[in-house]
Amino acid sequence: MNIPGKQEIFAISSDDEFNALALKVFRHQAANCSVYQEFINNLRIDPNKVGSIREIPFLPISFFKSHTILSTKEPVQVVFSSSGTTGMINSQHAVSDLDWYEQSFRRTFDLFYGNIKDYCVLALLPSYLEREGSSLIYMAGDLVKNSSNTASGFYLYEYKELFDQLNKQLATNTPTLLLGVTFALLDFIEEFKIDFPNLIVMETGGMKGRRKEMIREDLHQKLCAGFGVKSIHSEYGMTEMLSQAYSPGNGLFYTPPWLKILTRDTNDPMTILENNQTGGINVIDLANVNSCAFLATQDLGRVYGDGSFEVLGRFDNSDIRGCNLLVVD
Image (tube, rainbow, N blue to C red; front, side):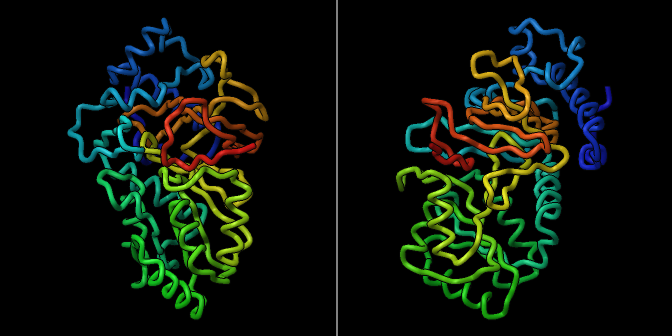
């Protein structure tokens, strides 16, 4: 069986195309990813009898903590690792072809925000910069590099320098993206306030043990006041995924055509729920063609008829991680 390539995956334009390619990827991974194959066998599922994406078994992302998940014999180029508190076992995603990741995040950014060359990109990601193996740092570094603005760059705890740079971009009315980890954005606005209505503030989630988790509405209201913006954008991504979803600030996330979110019954993980029902978030990320594209996350959410979804929280006793999950009522 031919493995779907980038030209097919990134050209998906309909649900029918997505479903057909997802089944191709599933059968390839069921045959070539030993961990996923064993998982399917233990469920006593015959991959050849799976006829729709709703019947596909989703691998719990906890397997990325204990196993190397690969569906290819190609050499590994990089291993991305998740963030976490001291003593935690972090997930590791072995990536054999970085071009899948690069094409995925570049195309997704262009789809939702336009040409990166039009932006000044300021990245406030201290906890990620302070460790190795962050896929978010890799993506942010690529966005900074491909921005045509020489002021684009990373900030650790240099809040005064960031404040000065934001004011420069405000004065020249430059389209500006501030990508920040949640606790650092809060730290910044406690020291500095700015009124920059056209600024795109994108929080990537995660207090990293530095602050108490907050309800999303309260957090975004506070950040809106601190930056003088009408909404706070969010990214939904994680180490185990090579694609991202984005929210323009209304709590709803939207996906590129090669990424689909489903929800599963919390009491019966093989049952996929209908739209508008709350359940565990399952991810089909076809950019994960060389690892596993079918992931059962530890997040709770709800999917709507237009394919958008919202994140409502996290399963009890799940690890606190950096994939943008905020506490809700």
